[in-house]
Image 1 (tube, rainbow, N blue to C red):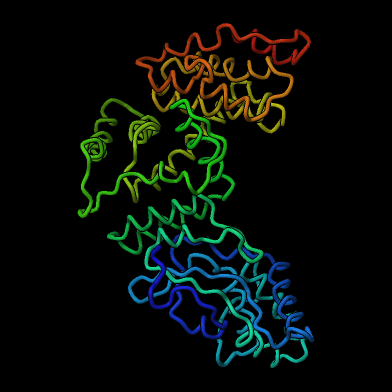
Image 2: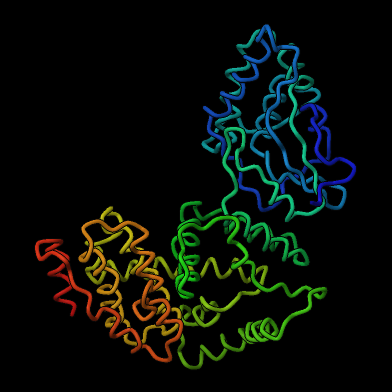
Length: 426
């Protein structure tokens, strides 16, 4: 453990905590509490103040995890609660807790600020309420000088809050790897990241990148969690690190990307193929800026592939129909693996072959659960039935031609529309 030897773990009042040099790190998500959540916090504290048995007992509002770095305390967990408490205090005491926030607008901050103003202005015993928050409400403060330790300590059971997702932790890691870059560069990276919805980022990592990485090694990919982010941390190139021959090879390969881009223009290589060359799914990335560029490329690539699938007529069996969800995801993941390695070579034929391979599972089983798709994807029992293993080992695009051989439906009356569609593809 790297818990701070001086501060360590302690219970502190809200007033004491807010007087410290607290900072919100770049990797934290923006304020996102809903009005109902913020008002529930107001009510919880109010009820504690008026509890005849416990009103003089400290009221604990959960834990806050802080990372000490260069004299500052960066908030790893507890940001939403602290900001909401700070807004409450600003409404009650403008002298000691001044805060200038917009009273109008549709952002979470503006909506909560306005709702708090309406609620608190009607409150009686405002001074008692203020004192209770400042001196009777406490938080368990955990201070560490090791950011990785801070994330390991991270309490996923936030007070009515939302834990950081694995992709948020990856964002934090790669921003730290950009510590030698300018603040403007980091701000641009964070703004681009925050412009993408959490659901799209989660889908990219959990549904595709993580599963492809596991399935191509014949491993199960049941759930992407914080324990799995190591596979996307990449290679750190800071001078203090000693690189292995394998790492040096990939660092050198990435160093020639500017040459590749120049060469691409002379041979009419489009941006998507240039991106595929740079961001190979079975190769490690360089930690820092390259990670964010990879995410941006993969989001765009995924969107383009799904648009092309829709244009090909296959969207009638898309993932929005629940019974096709897992086979659709299997198909798109396999297609992403194929184009990442072979680009557009024989792509129309490959798209059909991979569709048949993935959707045949829907014909074989009356009900497809994720475990069935997982078994098909990792080639359980026969690695040559896994599109991902075959593609990882493939020398040329023709390797996938026989993936769907021998796959037959168990019931001639089952999924007749899909059977007819597959028959036309073959």
